[in-house]
Amino acid sequence: HTKIIIDTTLLKCYLQNKPKMVASLLRLKDNECHIAESEKALRRARRMNDMIILYKSKELHEKALNELKKYANMQNTQKHELGGPNHTIKYLQDLGPKDIDLIKEYSKWVVEKHLDRC
Image 1: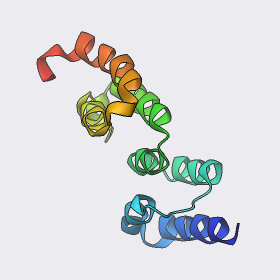
Image 2: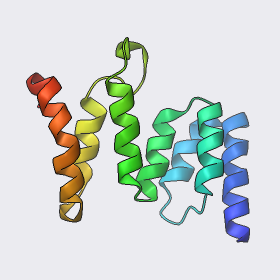
Image 3: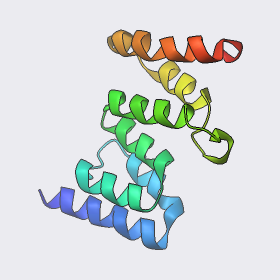
Image 4: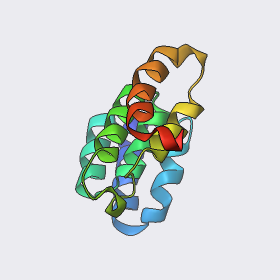
């Protein structure tokens, strides 16, 4: 329980004072950031790429893919760091055999809308 408090507090401190350190913290295999608190803090700071890293580190792949799909399909996606299908394609490529159902489900919209990039 203490590690959750420490890691989540560290995340919030990094967001305020050392934003470049956020991704490094979230990529640690043993990071214990509280999911809901971290999501709130990352949304407030508009750090959606870091949110994807959080989801990936916690193996919340469906949440990550839903966020990626949402941003890929937004208008004016060139203005957003997660715009377009490339981040989704990369994320899907990093998944393993145990995630085949997610790969099938989320690759459909990429292929249908962005066949030229697959």
